[in-house]
Length: 235
Image (cartoon, rainbow, N blue to C red; front, side, top):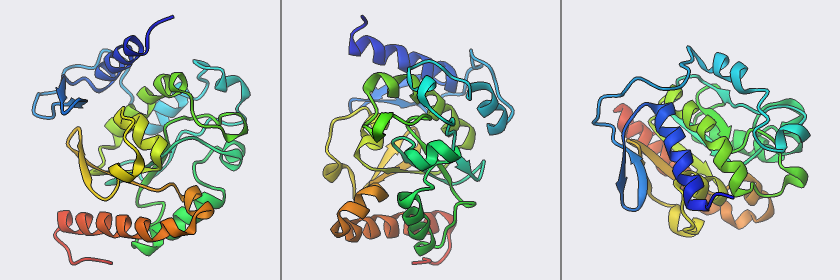
């Protein structure tokens, strides 16, 4: 069985081919060098997100493909400037084939409305496209197999901002074990995009005290977005 470092190297190579850009190591993370002209992608080129979804929706790379009800690709504006990323579909998402439609999703809608956005303004996806049994945490091998799909979505959408919802999404996307408390409250560079980490809406349902910090994070996101657009702060 391949070592974790070997698996990571394999995934990074898959990602490099998907993005068609050179990888550089900086601050211990693999980052895309956005100054290098893009190479011709080695894999298939998709004209839009819909054709990409059609190509991968029957994925059986891991056992979750056999237990899912529906493949949960993602939803929102195809060229959104802000992309929200959670960890994996839950029961309601598995049934409907859309991310964040259960109680946590309803709370996410309220959070978006509070910073003057709606689902049609942003893009929402997960690390995994299929529901883990009993809503358990994604396994490293599942995330490693599914991550290239998410990275291809990011490449196609080209958001200016990424907001990781929860520890698991942030740790898998950044390939780090740093706890959420040390990741949130600041913007990080992610291949030239600004990445912010905050609590998952499901955590807010269990621990309402987290709402205060989440609101501060969301205000920071909205303020930076307004600054980028050269417009007065909306919140």
